[in-house]
Length: 97
Image (cartoon, rainbow, N blue to C red; front, side, top):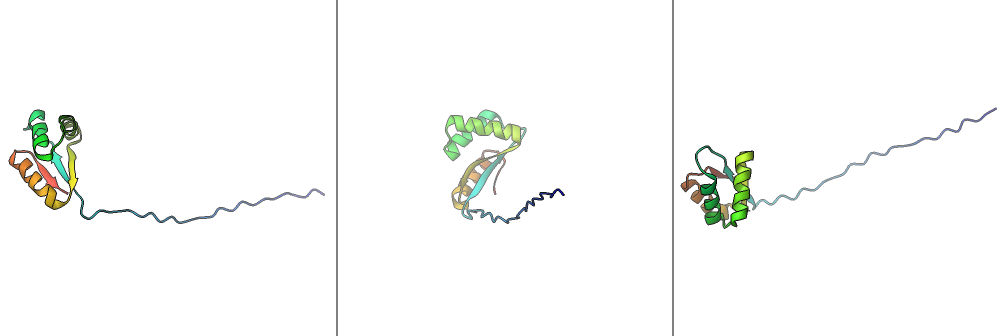
């Protein structure tokens, strides 16, 4: 008589807890695309207001153009508020989120 060799495999379920670090003091300054402002105008404002390098400002304007928006600066609301107001004063759509 042949014996059947039976092996069993057990699968164990494990729950993994992921901890997400949220910085409540950090917000994004978002600049939005429009059909009015030129690339040069937006780039110049980002250099002047956000202290971007010309290359960084150019990259942000391309992202704004192709994606519709770009987070151009991260910081506290107190830091970003005057920048947002200056960008809005320049006729460019912006918000802090």
